[in-house]
Amino acid sequence: MTAKALLVVHGIGEQHRGATTEKLLRGLTAAFGEGRLEVSRNPEGQVVSVALGDVGVRFYEVYWADLLSREVNRGAMSWSTLPTLVWQPMLCRRSGLLPRTEYSAALVAGWLAALLPASLLAFPLSQGARFFAQILDRDRMKRIEAAARKLPFWERSLALADATAHGDTKVEEAIEGTVADIPNYMKSIARGEGPGLKVIALFHAAMRGAREDGCDEIHVLAHSLGTVVSYQALTGLGRHEAEPPYAPKRLYTIGSPLEKIGFFWPWTIRRVAPSAHPAFCWTNFYHAMDAVSGRLKRFQAWAPHHDVRLKGGGGVIRSHVVYERSPQFLGTLTEELFGVRAVPPKPTMARRLQDRALTAAENLGAPFAFLASLGVGLGLIGAVLLGGPLLVVRLFRGLGGAHWADRVGNGFAAFLLIGMLVALVRELRQCYRDARDEVARAVRSR
Picture 1: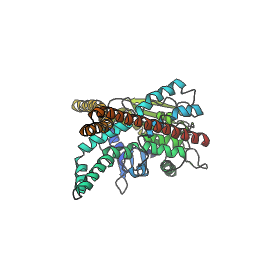
Picture 2: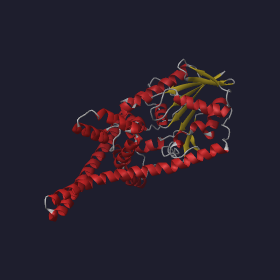
Picture 3: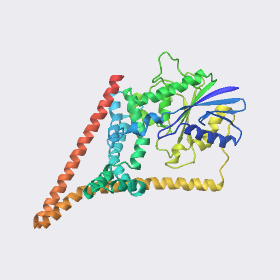
Picture 4: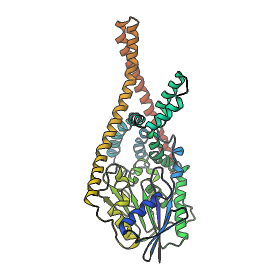
């Protein structure tokens, strides 16, 4: 019986052990049909292998979500993270870390001009999203009100105000539990210490396990940030020098941000072939609606690959996790693993209509939610800037100084606006200095 190994590397988010392989198993079952695959599980109920005929595939899950948990990610991402990050490509190009033959000065300057002002919207966007999250999350409000109910009036008011301004909401849960995986991991890799290297070590341990088990072929399947983990590990990051180069036969990447990682953190991308196998093939799956993934335009020179664009199956949200039901992906995977190309049966008309309706809802709802949150966030900032002057005007008029009220109010508004602009410029300068220091460390490490 032919024994093959499949390393499964999950993406960002608060994943559960075994959940990624279960999703993959559902896709394979849909492709081959119920009952055709022989599935083996460990005592905990997790899938360890599947077999079809004389081909067995052992699963080696690289589970790293507990290393980048929400608690670990606290503080890894703030409103200044994006304004700091957008300076790095320009600084990297100046320092020679970003190849001038691949990234022109106009391209880098154009992205900086577009992304810098866009990154400043992160703060009002998050504040607007918090506003909606607090209104819609009734359970949270009930918990806060129950905790403050027995307090005296003044302390109760302060507690409610503090919870409204600083208490965690679904927004913080989403950012710290999912999105913050990326800056936390990349900062760790860039500095050569921290949880990112522990994630890489888990990949090496899984690869060693597959080799020690005597598998005839090794395949690697990675999703989202897991594609970055896999590529960096396969090109030698964190591998012991005495250990021979890995030789996986196939690498499958889905929803990969490698092209973007190479633009913002170019010094973390090693220009080394990721496999010593003579027949190595890398297939990169991406979806046109997925803002994270895309074609790998600048990896062909040291890692031969081909890009496959997935069709249908989701809008701006679901397109990033469409692989377990994608015919293109499952057809490629089943053919490489089992020698038989199998795809799920064509969905019914009702299912296709339902899928299109969900896709339309995603594509319409996501921009609407973005604009609504941004509008509310900007409105809250405007209310703070205008609220103080209005109170000053009312105070002067109440004290009989109506002829001074408008002048003082306008002066106070100008003072607040200038103060906000000065603070913003100072923060941007600090973001630039932080980015400069990060790139300087990269140059020294090279």
